[in-house]
Amino acid sequence: MRHIALVGMMGSGKSETGRKLALVLGRRFVDCDRLVADAAGCSIPEIFAAEGEAGFRRRESELLAAVLASTDASVIATGGGVVTVPRNRALLAGAAVCWLRARPEVLAARVGDGSGRPLLVSGAGGGGAPERLRKLAADRDGWYVEVADIVVDVDDLSVSQATMAVAARLADVSGWLDDGPGEAAT
Image (tube, rainbow, N blue to C red; front, side, top):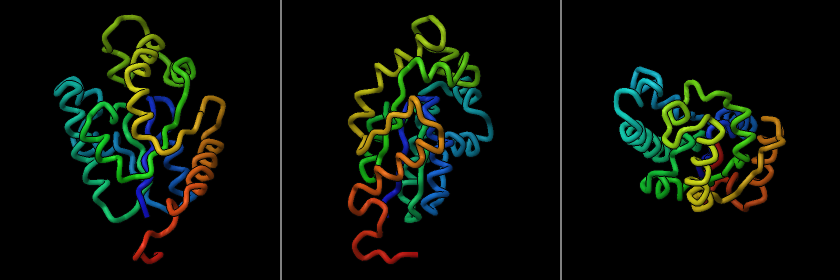
């Protein structure tokens, strides 16, 4: 079985949808942002303050590689910026990748003022969270397209609806939810 990786902007619902999807599919759930924070022993804003975005991305990349190397097929909620690193895009090629796509104005309503989200609080370009989200989305959308095997538009979906939409799309693709050649069901 392949890992299932959820990608998308902050506020798209990767963590909540991933948690529910893992329950539905009977798989382990991995939240990459939580793993990074736990491994560092501090919050993501604290990592950004101490090491900058480059330090955070380095940590994220190391943990993503370890998770994807695991033989325990998981549902993985990635960080929103995981696609900005070429190594991460290459790593994701071995997973079934679903882009949870949402319009910037929907994301802005979900994340509010961006507190606790370093790229919104300290992002370049001025303006508030909505403007910064639009810029981040414009910068990243091409990379999301590059890595995504499937896309689910989540603008008007609840977490439960998004979960079922992702599961249905994955089931449509032969072999993604089944054991691969030579693998036994557990």
